[in-house]
Length: 139
Image (cartoon, rainbow, N blue to C red; front, side, top):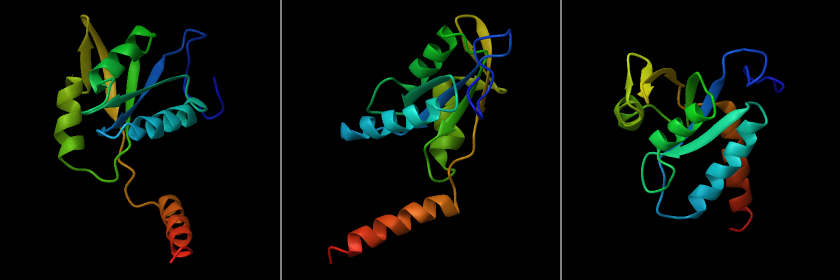
């Protein structure tokens, strides 16, 4: 198990997959950002996949299926969204096929929990301050 991580593939423990959920974009650079966050999360969790609500692939459902095919018994969906809205309350659960906290894949029920969105967080504000100061230098 990686530092601060969750149970992995060894030792008979539950295997937890992390699904980084993003909206998606027609701009291909969006996938580069998603892959960067996937790599960062992979430093803490053994099974990490990225899935998109629209525009990009893999879809959320395809990413969920990939995690299960790699042995995940349960999935935590980590939305890279700022706040709770229709996408998180309705679109993600519907797209993933979540009913009563479970998704069914190939006849197998898998526990799926959607984590809270980023929300207001001082750590994010620090990045925003850094970006604002960097941009202000060119004024």
